[in-house]
Image 1 (cartoon, helix red, strand yellow):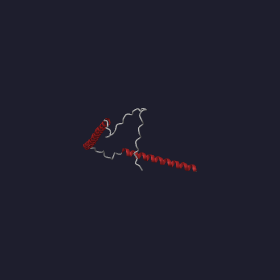
Image 2 (cartoon, rainbow, N blue to C red):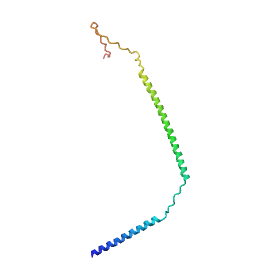
Image 3 (cartoon, one colour):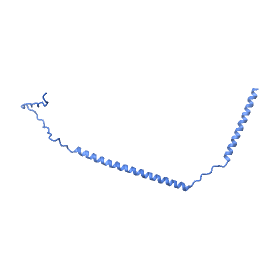
Image 4 (tube, one colour):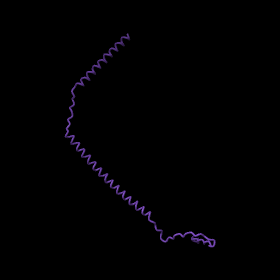
Length: 131
């Protein structure tokens, strides 16, 4: 008896499956044959053209302002570079010119070879104050 019950359940399940497949087929066929309810979008060519021209004008203005700003920055950098080159030239010129010694400076005498006949020089007196 269990065998007949299982067979009946399988037949009922098969019938339900066939019904669902037919129902799905009909729904899909209706959807594909129905006319498109959406209206086609109307495109106004003149409106699109004017919008493109406005956008192009805006982009042109932005590019002009950016290029002017960049040109100012380039000119400023060139001025700074020229000023730096002048300062470098002045510094090199200062290095090349001989510096005068301090006022009242004594140039050192060349060392003489000592002879045995010369007496040794006396030591300089101490400059510390007496306690």
